[in-house]
Image 1 (tube, rainbow, N blue to C red):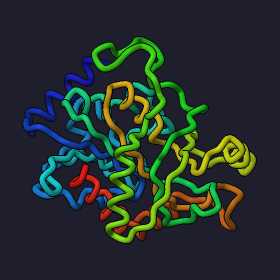
Image 2 (image 1 turned 30 degrees about the vertical axis):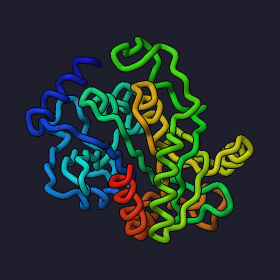
Image 3 (image 1 turned 135 degrees about the vertical axis):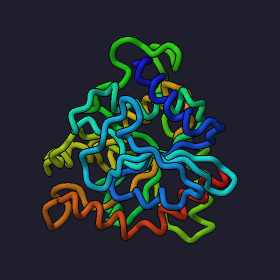
Image 4 (image 1 turned 90 degrees about the vertical axis):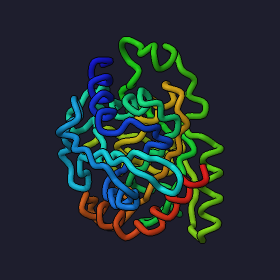
Length: 270
C-alpha cells in the first residue's frame, strides 16, 4: 500500500509541488463542481500510478488541481467504489494520497437516496454521522502506522465545526440545507424496500454506496472532514418509480447551482 501511495504522490508532485489546502471528492453527477476550479491542472487517473479508471457514468476519472478564492484545492472527479470490484485498499487510495500530500481538510460529496420524509430529490444534507454496518473496514489488516493508530476513535468522523461553516454559508446564500445520518450500502444493486425500513429503524436519514470508507480513512489519518449528500431520489419503496442511475445524475445536475455555491463558500470560509 505504501508503494502505491508513494508512486501516486511522486507523480502528482512532479506536476504540482505547491501546498494544497483542501481536497474534494465528487460523487455521481457532481463533477461540474470541478468546473469552478480556476487555473486548473487536469491529471487523468490513467496516468496516475495505481489509480483505477472509473467504470461509472458521471465519474470522469480526473484529478483537478487549482484555486477557488484564495485556497488551493484538488478534486477527485470520480471516486473508486467497492462495488466496482476494488478492494478497500484501492477505495481509500485517494484519501491516503491526500494525507501523504499534507492535505488536512477534506470535503466528501455524494448523491444518495432519501429515507427521512423531508429529504426529497434536490435536498442537500450535511452528514452528521454515519451507519457503516455493511461497510467492510478500510482499517482491516496491517495498520498504516504512518497515518494513524491501530484503534481509532470514530466519535466525530464529520467535523462539527466544518458543518457550522456550511450552515453559515447556506444561510448567507438562501440555500436550504439540513443535516442527518448517512447509511452505507455496498451495492451495486439498490437497497430493497425491507432493507430501507431496517435502515430507517436504525436511525438512518439517507443511504448511499460511498463516502463511509473514505471518511473512516480520513478520520484515521487525522484529517478534518465535511460530508455533503445531495438527495437525488427517494429510497427504495418510498417513491413511485423504479430507481435508476440516470435519475441520480439528472437530479444532481439540476441541483448543481446550489451545491456549487455551497461548496465554494465553504472552501473560502473554512
